[in-house]
Image 1 (cartoon, rainbow, N blue to C red):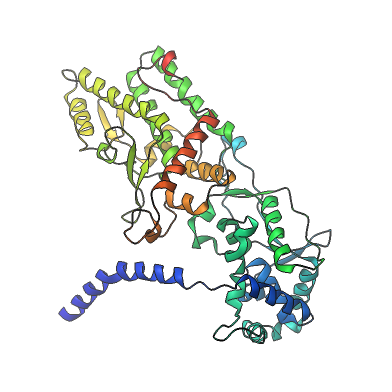
Image 2: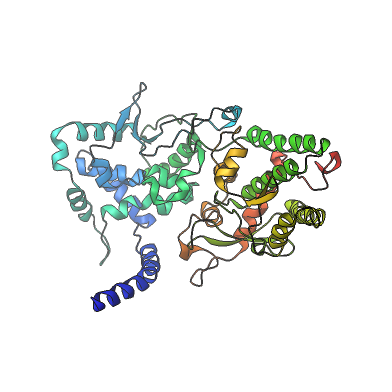
Length: 464
C-alpha cells in the first residue's frame, strides 16, 4: 500500500510536465504538402476522378475534411434548389433566449451553416454516400491511391497530409486559422475560440474560392454562390446594445446623484467599473472578479488576471482611457472610508483592507456592511438586462475578428491558447507586443462604441 501511494504521488507530480511536453510535440508533428505536391495531387485526382477514392481525396484537399469524417454517415451532404452541394457544418451555438430589449441588439447569426463543394465533386460524393460504392471507399483505399503518386525518396503522400493542406496553405488566400477550422469541420471543443466568434460566411466563401483557384489551376468547375449570412456566437452585442448598457449606467448614476443615494451610487459605479474592466480585459465572470488591488500596478497600467484556475494567469495592459476611472474609484473608496471613521467602524475597516490589498477589490455596499462581489449578486442587480455575463468576451472577440486581427494573438489575450503558447511561458518565443496591440485595438473599440467614461466626483461634468 505504501509503494502504491508513492507511485501515485510520483505519477501526479509528472502530470503537468508530461502534458506540457506533449503539447509541444503535437505542435511539431503536423504534416502537410508542399505547394508542388498540392498541384501534383490535384492533377492526379482530377485525372482519375471516375475513381471514388480520387473524388474523396480531392474533396479532402479542397475542404480540409478528413477522409474518415467525409465518409461518416453522420456527415450530411445537402443539395439546394440551385443544384449546389454543401457539407453541413457540425458546429452549433446555444440560443441565449434573452427576453430583455437587449435581444434586439444581439448579432443575428443563422442556426446552420455549410461548407461549399464544387458542383462536380458534390455530385460524385452524393453518389458515393448514397450507393454501395461507399463500401469500397475507406481511408485505407484512399491512402493506397495517394501512395501511387510518384514522390521523392522518404516522402509519402497520405490522407492526413492531404487534409492538412487547407490549414497550411489557406493563409495565402486570406483564410484565418479560425476560418480553416470552420471549413474543415473541426470539433468545436478542440479550440475554445470557436465558441466566441460571429462571422460573415460569405466572406469566408470568397477566400476559400481563392484557395480553390490556386489548387485547381485550370479547371472550370462551378462553385456555389456565397450566401449573405452570419454564423457563430449568439451572445455578441452590436454597437447599439453596448451603448444601451452603458447609457443605463450613466443615467442611473446621475439620477442617484441628484437624490444623494450614497449606497446606490457606489453599487452602480462598482457594476460599471466591473463591466468596463471585463470589456477591456476579456476576463471571465467569476466570484471576487479581478481579485484584490494587488493585482493592479500603482498607475493602473497593467492588471494580473487568473479567472480559470492555476492555468489561466496573464498580465494584461489596461487602456489609458479607463485609468482615470480606476483612479477615481480609489479616491471614492478613500472618501467613503473617511466619512465612516466615526459612523461605521465595519465599513471603515473593510475599505481599509480593500485599499491594502487584503480583501477583494470590488464589494457591494449592503445596509451597514460591504460584501464581496459574486457572479450571482451581479446577475441579481442587473437582472433587467437578462444577458449572459460573458457577453464582453463574445462581443469584443467578434469585433476584433471583424477588424482582421490575428486570431492567434487574440486567443493569447483571451486565454484561449495552450499554456506553452503564452508570451510569459519560458518556452514561448511570443513577445508582449501582440498583447499591447490587442489592448490598443480594444481602446479604439471603446471610442467607436462611444462608451461613456465616468469619473468621480459624480455630476453632469463627470459623466462624459
